[in-house]
Image 1 (cartoon, rainbow, N blue to C red):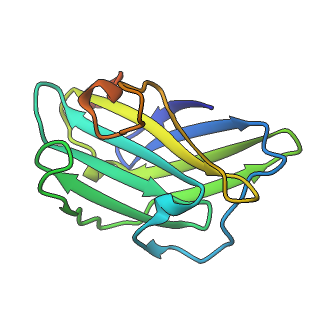
Image 2 (image 1 turned 120 degrees about the horizontal axis):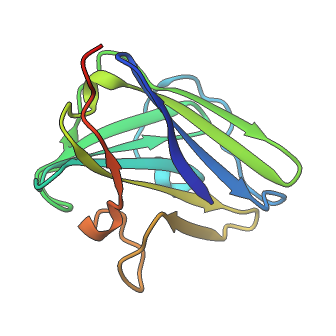
Length: 161
């Protein structure tokens, strides 16, 4: 799995995941846009964003089904609540024979407008129920995407046009 930010403008933060070896990947069926909980129970793509030096952060869960959710936390796994969003993310899964691309456009107004650390992760389910947990960095033997050590990317504050 590779993941990266591919663009940012005043309206959207655009992110991309590339997954290799997708022959047995379970891709959730189209369900239409809208919030949903427990998306991580099958193939799901996630982004975590935390202002530099802070403890609070946000988590975005994005599904190939086009369902999504966004949460705010006060500290790792503490104070979880739904993050209000005026616009929904736009998600697109493009499966191929040997790899898949998942693109998402996240409304920029939910991303803090200061320098941030971020982590990009995914849960991949294969036929038969096997799940694997992917991140730019794992901090221990058991995957925990909420660990501050997983926030390895840097997202600069937007600049004035």
